[in-house]
Amino acid sequence: MIAIYVQRGALLERIPVEPDVTPPEAPVWIDLVNPTVQEDRTVEQILGIAIPTREEMQEIEVSSRLYVENGGRYMTATLMCQSDTATPKTTPVTFILANHCLCTVRYDSPRPFALIEHKLGRYCGPKVSGDSVLMDLLDAIVDRSADILERVAAEVDQVSRMIFEPEDEGGPPSYNEVLKTLGRKGDLSSKVRECLVSVGRLLSFLANEAEAMKWPKDYKLQLTSMQRDVISLSDHATYLAGKITFLLDALLGIVSIQQNDIIKIFSIAAVIFMPPTLVASIYGMNFKHMPELDWFAGYPIALFIMLCAAIGPILFFKWKKWL
Image (cartoon, rainbow, N blue to C red; front, side):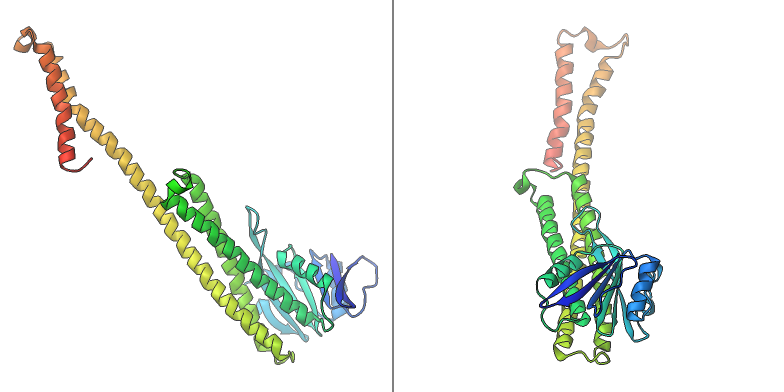
């Protein structure tokens, strides 16, 4: 699908391009979503540049993601998708700047695109261009990453309270659920960090190309600000990853301690009942010459010996502070 955005007064108007329909002139932003071969060729004719394929967008080498070709700046970044669901994922998105027109190629729907489309559909300013749309998109991507990390941090703090202060959370937690939650948050934070690293490389490339594109000073300052934000967010994502690892280790340690306590109880119970069992086994033997069998008080004496044999280990364990 091709969507072309053109300026109409103080806003950007979205015009879907149908097959065999002449596209509008002077586009500011061309958005390709799951494009077909024919749609790629249509945009190539409009801008005079080549559109990368999906396989080319998935390359991980910097030279395959950030380069200049035929006057166009090609920048591919890995962005977050479906971060509010149980199955977050990343997707490559290519930004192409050619003659101050922005072309984006994507095969998913990262949330910043919808936010910027809605924003520019209400007001875009008189000097809107592909360069300014790109800056708005990148700023929205960084803000979105910050929002995701804030949410992850809040949820990790809640899990931390569940582990270390279970009485404040209504009782001991379900360790299976806690492990699954920590695993999901760890996966999400690692995906956000991957996105930030990719966007950081894109911002560095843009900063190097700003002079050649004759960008104004305010764009350069905005790029510098976004680079600082990406660095601080990457550090925060690294901190969250370390905290999640600590909580996983702490949870496994708590589970191990509880299992050891259970095993200790069974071991002590076995030791306590071992002496009475020995006494009962002796007096259960059917030997002919056992003088205690003829005693009038033999049975209560045997019971008393069993009781003492059970109480003795308990007192000994308490004296050793094993209980």
